[in-house]
Image 1: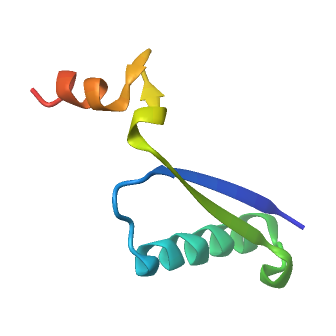
Image 2: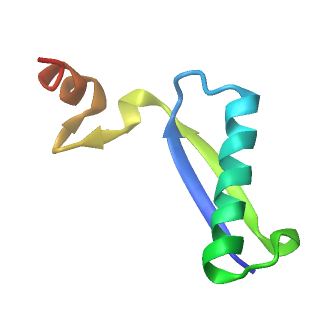
Length: 68
């Protein structure tokens, strides 16, 4: 019974986009690991942008540095 936790920044992902992520992750587990989609759980958590960091800095700063 797979459980997958997908974390994304809270930047306006639509319900349709989230449904596509859930379907895609489920399909991947079915194809790669032969898991039963009826017992595959996918959770999407949205994290405030200021609570997310990459490369040792807050995400907004990381993005500013890498826009060039």
